Length: 578
Ligand SMILES: O=C(O)CCC(=O)C(=O)O
Ligand SMILES: [Fe+2]
Image: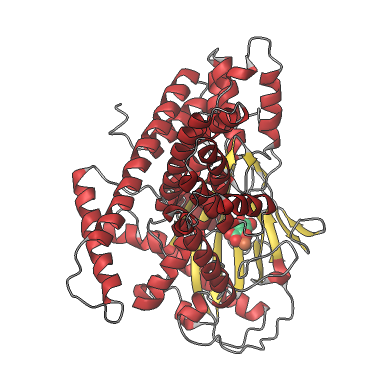
């Protein structure tokens, strides 16, 4: 089909399916189209978001004074109108975060390089592997693939390219080369252009962070704005790191370093004002840099120097202040703000006795019920459904299909799912809860908070030496840190108190649930091999760090249910059923 009418995720899926069925030509054409389609579409959305921001900021306010942040909301409404218009003008669909993640992490190249190679295009295969490595430099399997390509006599290593390189990456490299060769006009041309392109790329990346957000509950207006904003800000802050990477190498000072090259080149070309402005811009970022302080002193003493030359450039100033403000704000968010505080109520004081941290029971449900739930999962699981927040456990070697109770009820209301199927999920949930209350001697009122039927399916492919996990080590209600601390803040599901995982099948390899006493998995405590009817129940905190080993073959399904003491986080959908 035409690139413009098939969405990128569909093309990606077709490409991967083609790869799985050894159709390498189909794999190449679909994945190439997928990448092109994503690029085009992402660009369009980015442009809409960026230009609507700009337009809204530039219109005449409806009133001459700003009162109680009304101007902010006026701009937001105008911005929205502009986005709606943009959406009508082009065929606008939102790319969901999972899709963005797939493409931005260069996942298609993980398949594409194999398909190129099988298709007798080894040079392209090497470039695809390289492109993947630029974004995933620690991927051991790809490192060895790339080494394999590098050792092939018919592959020219100097012709290996990064398919995803941005303009500024070339411009910057040309600029530094011109600098080494003292071609000052070229330094100026390349570096000025690179600067613009760099800022544009970072802004485009940031625009990707302004997508939809599902907080999973129904907050008041202000908390909901705050949550969405905090979520988006966290995402935007990652762009700086992504754009400061040239061919896999991190250049922490990539943006400010432009001003260093520029100040010297401008000086050499006799443009003192531009040299001073660039030097002052650099100094904003590195105020103690001795060389630059020395240069400034030198420029200052020149007879032609004027005081007003020593003002940082506008874009440098804007970028600098945005960077600092955002950094400070995000630190504040991490320290003080979480979904809890956003609801403006206190966490109930609980001194719940938790006699045993975790228990495993066998044959909790019958084979018949396992099979019924499996059937529902197979039929209705939606790729990615239910993986919100940053709990996304996607491994490129597995497909995740999920069905949340919310989606199930929606499907039932639309008539695509039987009521008896929803009833079964609900009834089994009730049994799990009852059991939880008894086994853990829970005396406070316990509420369901989230129900998730989920399958992880191994993607066959002997080429991969998997070292990753199906689900990295985590705690269910806090954010485990390398140092072992586990702050209870956003984006963790901080209100979760108890977790139950009911397994539905065996007949796959790998996929063991394991508990670990440390975040690196150095000391594994329990390993549970899932099978139909096994129920693992545990408290959701740091005392129960756990993960899932890679599913190497076959499909692993489970019904996961979380409980909370906090009625405000109760599973609304369940109540609607009553
Ligand atoms: O499926 C499992 O065994 C565990 C899944 C899990 O830890 C989670 O979803 O938080
Ligand atoms: Fe978990």
